[in-house]
Length: 147
Image (tube, rainbow, N blue to C red; front, side):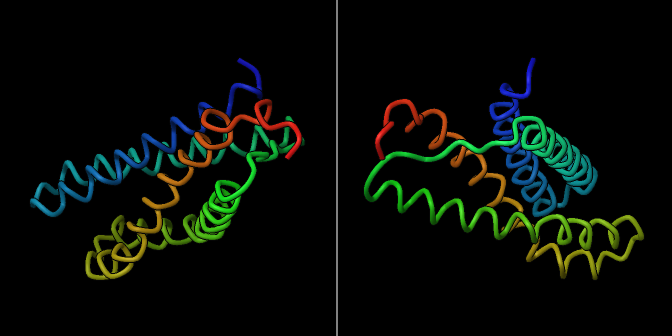
């Protein structure tokens, strides 16, 4: 495996995070606290692995893949990417601020911040997969070289 293989790894880790976040939310809504804890810790682990792989990729490759599809789809991609990046910066402190009270058994504080963290974290995970799909699968740069 080389650094050039990491975008698909990153998308897979984002997808796994989204699955764990969703399952964890469903478990806590149905009162299955232990399953919720396991899923959310798995979501933290996969998101942390993602961040490590993402940073490794960008430090190693030192380049970015330009989205070259023309027209409306380019505008959609830019809007999606912008919202994804903006909210991704907020995710690390939000997850940390949600996890620490839970580890300290301060569930009132945990629930208060989790109401904000969960939808943002889930959005970032899902849009990470969509950004990958748009950039590398649906509209790869070699199909649109002149945009």
